[in-house]
Length: 75
Image (spheres, helix red, strand yellow):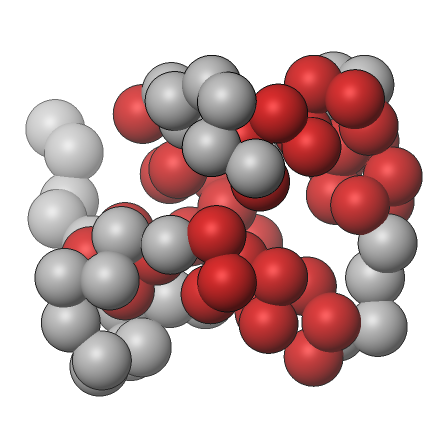
């Protein structure tokens, strides 16, 4: 998962600091996710999947299909 997050970030020419700022957290906090020291909370996974335009399953290496799922309409 962490390699995939790095690849997505680098494809957009973004720094860890830029992603951390988007997530409203410190760069150090974000890097703890990247090295696997801390688990990534669900809300952060969702936010990253929306930012990168991929599914959470793709981020978690559950699929190689990057295309996000069609979002359900919330009533």
